[in-house]
Image (tube, rainbow, N blue to C red):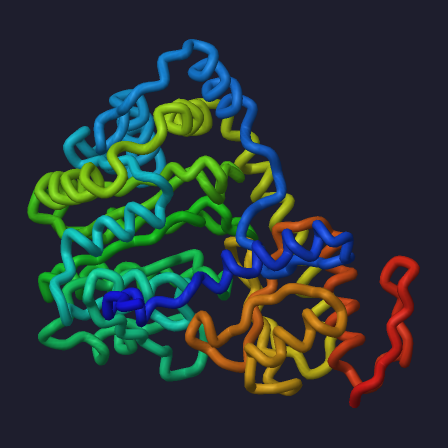
Length: 405
């Protein structure tokens, strides 16, 4: 069978594949622990559920405008004004089938073949393939000091004559790092001076810990006119625990949003009207579920960090947000794919190899599950890797015996 060059060069999503593996193992009755997941375990806010239920009961389930319903766009405008101090016009807003689709549509609108897109390492697993899908070239910018926090110099040295776009994701998936305000200020200023597009992937912006406040890129933007090349992407998936609802949005200048809307109109039409109703319910409803989720995640983060700090040979940088950590397991093997497979095979704990995020020797461990899953998952991993662990381990009534060194 003859496939396109793009199809031949795009692999499956590593994180979505793990979800599939977890579902299969659980269906078989295996006691798998999924520490690789990317969705909060809390339920969607009641306001969202009631709004969607009411829409279903009305029977009026129709097409919507490709850029979203007026009600959802009003909610996004209000949200942007509340959290970013910037009030976009309706023409500056496009709703989409998740933040991922908003990013994908922006790439389609901006990137020509061989155009370059720069983003810091570690990066979200989908960025490189998303850039490749539109014929562009992904350009990872690795911090010279080996940390999870980039400096503006790390971005500058990767920018060339073919660079069109910079993507910044803070709080960061997979590391949980919250980039410093001075870096955000520097990258906004740098992109404005160089005439580069800057896409802020802010999907985790309210899930921050230790008294931090979400960082607002508009605070540092000198240009808020229709010439601005700042793009803000957000959605309901993470902060409202509404991953399956698939509603996100983009805020940008009118010409870009118009182009993105035209593209989206031909690709998928507008997002589901039912799910847009749910998103309006979440954004305009009580916000206590967001704080409840944030507080739960902060506690889970503390439990995970304590477990990993007691794990000899593992180095953990305390996440400042999200629900991910990115500990260094290189003491036990630089090949993160092999290490992740070993852990799954021996003790049925799912992790995501650091290679998928541009950093070998690391594993992404999620703390969005229960405290019991976190503690038992780390206990199993430690038993599998630490040669000083006891020879036997019980998982439920099943006894495992170490037959490796």
